[in-house]
Image (cartoon, rainbow, N blue to C red; front, side, top):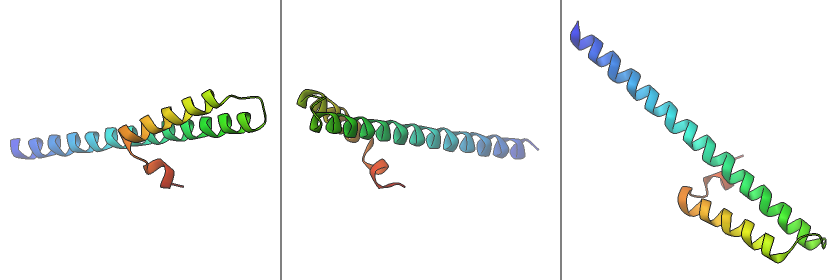
Length: 78
């Protein structure tokens, strides 16, 4: 009986860890998408005379930092 409970506990812990990993991935994707949207908005504003090259550069640097830490998977997902 003890072996059964140990296996059940291990399976539950494994499922919990997988769930946490998936939540982290989704949060990283959302953050990447938000940074990409901000870069687009900064570029649009710069092109239309209401933004600055500095703001566009800052948005690009933030996006590149995110990609360096988390990869660019969010760019390839739908």
